Amino acid sequence: MPGWSTLPGVERTTLITGGSGFLGAHVVAAAVARSQAEGTLAEPLGPLVVAQCRSSALLAPRFCSPREAAQWIEADLLEGLAGLLERVQPTEIVHCAALSRAADCESDPAGARALNAEVPGQLAAWASTHGARLVHVSTDLVFGAEDAPRGGFSETAAPGPVSEYGRTKLEGERAVLEALPTATVARLPLLYGNSAGRGLGASDSILEQVERAERPRLFVDEWRTPLEVSCAGAALVELLDFEAPGVVHLAGPERVSRYELGLAVLTSMGLSLEEAEAELQPIRQEELDAGAPRPRDVSLNAAQAAEALSVELPGVSSGLARAH
Ligand SMILES: NC(=O)c1ccc[n+]([C@@H]2O[C@H](COP(=O)([O-])OP(=O)(O)OC[C@H]3O[C@@H](n4cnc5c(N)ncnc54)[C@H](OP(=O)(O)O)[C@@H]3O)[C@@H](O)[C@H]2O)c1
Image (cartoon, rainbow, N blue to C red; front, top):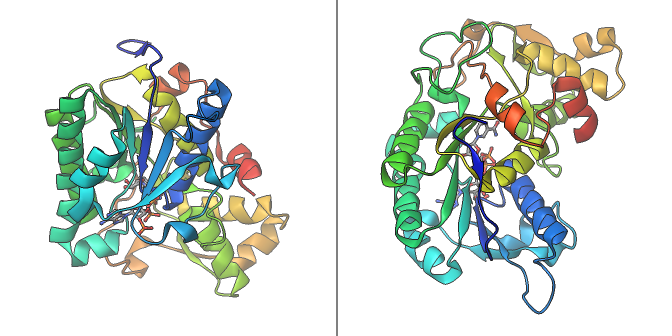
């Protein structure tokens, strides 16, 4: 793969920030699986995968087995980043924590900037000083000012966010690469899959609403290249083993509307197409105020990562089959 090479194996301590989040829980599971495959979780060394969360670690969802295979640490990154890093001394970091709800970023731009832009810069500066590998998680919503070209935005396309979330995440990307040019900034698309019954992500949120007989309203004029969340987690962990400086896109191969994704979610649960259509309301963006400006088409082209990684970046039907 041009510009990518495999890093030599080192004794490692892997820190996953935002380990309690929708994505982070799957990154923790993938990191534990990788350590188990390598035998580095064996006693007496103890767990070398450390997961950070802000609220109660006891309540954090765990997809790994055994549950205690990762060590959990509660820390608010806005106040406790330096202390966390000094305590853990990670050799590698997957940074998932963020203010991830676009409406929250719109109502609290300063808070969004602090967590989505300043914290990643500080983390990258620490990684630079201490020689740690950093994979920083970003988003397709750094695009949106223009529609994606046919085939999706490539890594070299010029970003153009339309929301505070997208703007602050783009600032975070730039802060990371300025402090640590060897870091990998992994842009992810809309994620779907198992959220441990929390109704998070693009599929569980729909299933939860359908269960409450709410008939979810889904856009027919908003397109993404969605990815199943456990595959995203595994791909991020695999990226730790590459020297892949700069921006990398991780996304599914299919461009679908939110409504098409909703139909796929429900038919994957055994409904007929007619039954699925009856459960959903197709709407256009102009019909709903979602609390933040919404782009139309932020499809990503992830051909480079799909070729380089052994983890599959599946299409919607095989991703959903894996998820539910
Ligand atoms: N979900 C998607 O479809 C999607 C798409 C593209 C990119 N992404 C990116 O993927 C990453 C994870 O997103 P997600 O959907 O998993 O978000 P999420 O479910 O909202 O999780 C956010 C995580 O950040 C932690 N966090 C929030 N504020 C914090 C603070 N001040 N200090 C420490 N930790 C804090 C949360 O901890 P607590 O739970 O303990 O509060 C949680 O673990 C983000 O960088 C996001 O931009 C997500």
